[in-house]
Length: 197
Image 1: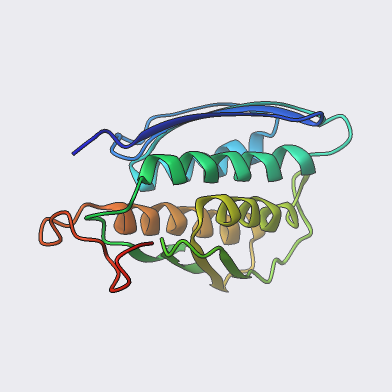
Image 2: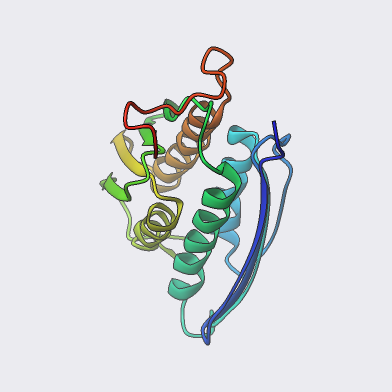
C-alpha cells in the first residue's frame, strides 16, 4: 500500500498555513498556530486518531481567531482528502463515544465524498478561556467541505464546556481512526456499490 501522507500549503491575505499529516502515524503532533486552545484540541485528533499532524499558521489573530481556526480546518481537510486517495480498501465509516467525567460525546463519520455537517453541542459557556466556542463549528465546517466527508457530532451531556469539546475532539480522532483503517477483507475494493466515492 502506498504511503498515506500529504503536505498542503494555503496562503491568503488573512492566513498562511502549512499542514503535514500521515494517516498511518503514531500520533505525533507539532503545532505553531497562535491559537493555544485549538492546538490542545488538535493534539486529541493526532493522539486518538494515530495520525501524525503538523500544523503551522501565521494568522490575523490580532483581530480575532476566526480566520485562523476556519482556515486550519480547511487546510487539514485538504490534506486529509489528498492523503486518503481513492479510498479503496478503507472501512469508510467510523464512530466513537468518548466520556470525560460528566461529559459524553458521539462522533460518526463517513468518507462519502459528500460534505455535510450536523453538529449539536449545547455549550454551557460561550468562551473557554479566551476561545470563542462558536469557532469550533467553523473548524469542522471547513474540514468537511474540503475533506469531502459527512460528519455528525453530538455532545450528549456535560456541564463543563472544556470537557464537552474535549470529548468531541477525542471522539473525532477515534472515529477517523476507525474509518481510515485498511480492512484486509476489502482488499482493493471500493467501499461503495457505486464503484466510486
